[in-house]
Length: 494
Figure 1 (cartoon, rainbow, N blue to C red):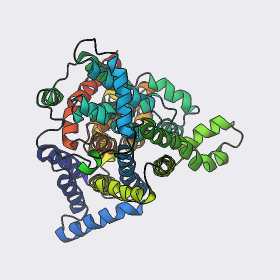
Figure 2: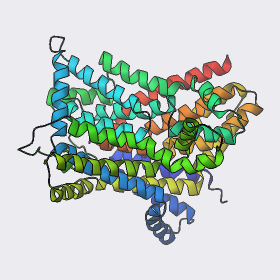
Figure 3: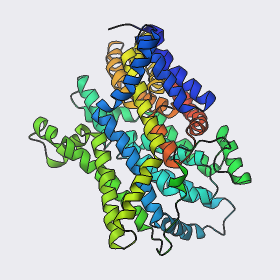
Figure 4: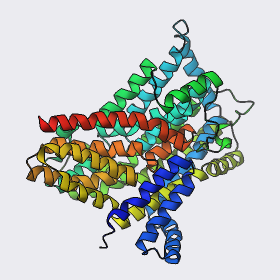
């Protein structure tokens, strides 16, 4: 395998820097992909450029990538359905009834209650981080808009409660995936090992604590404080130069004139989508569970099957089933005819095309990072810095940088668990603390990265500007990350 050395880090890092500086996400990602293939092609501009085009085409060779992009596009149909049917208006009316109970309290209490509801919803849907993000964004965006809470705040709450809850309550694909990695490292009881490590997984805990603390104290800082002032004082939910991740036709949909708004026309389709997710994970992984655990009980097999199932298949089938169920629900109520439903589906998909293109580029830059062995290079360099007392600290920092550069926490887990566990064992460092540092670092880097799929989906679900979301979330993620790193450093020396 070709050793590209320091050059392997340049494409993702420069793409991220340019995206934050210029706010031109598509151009920045495309530049990063092109630079990566230029490096692979020994800077032959013709070969590098042709390889870039081929890499974008090859994204669709992977069925998982294709299913994920289809899922993102179809979510647009679901969003436009629940708005047109009056489901969103009905949900807002229900929440307003709840908020009336707080009318006698000091000004701003309604904003606190709604944000807490959004955070709790994000944590409760721990079965899958992307579903959590989409649910929070879709359910609460209209209410946040009404209360003049900036879109950046909604994206932050959705992003910073989804992955942390999924990894701290690992009865889902996250937990099963982590156990698979631990099993590969020779742990006889990966379930117990994972839970012993979880008590040291400080970053996800801090991420949730910071979200709740900011909501309750209303003490935002950095770019988020500026966004809050803009929304309250000027009524602007987005910055003046914002480029929302969803087209206007998905956020400005009028309710049918002869329809009575009902909350269940919004809540039921989303509940169906969330409910179908673990069912499809278990279904797609059931054959593997039967083969590898023939003597195990039903529930143990089901949990194992969830971890072995296809996440991309599960989310695609879940959203398709939700859309079909929604069509039947609305047709029974005589809200829409079939022709209008088809037209709305196509309109919804078209509104999600910017996101679909962004996801394609995110997959493409991930592929070139794999070709360049970016993650492995960073991890190998870090080995030279390590001493037993520094192992958890360095593992957290390196995991964060790998996830930041590659945009994937799960890919970071695979790289770092394989390196960190043997290293901790050989150097007699705390293995559980080291595992936790690798996992927490992956989530931390994912929260900071503009090319992370969860970060992208958070911007999409909130209908906000992607770079504004990254800029406003970054100080909060860095606060949690720095504090976590210091804790690992202190524990390491003690």
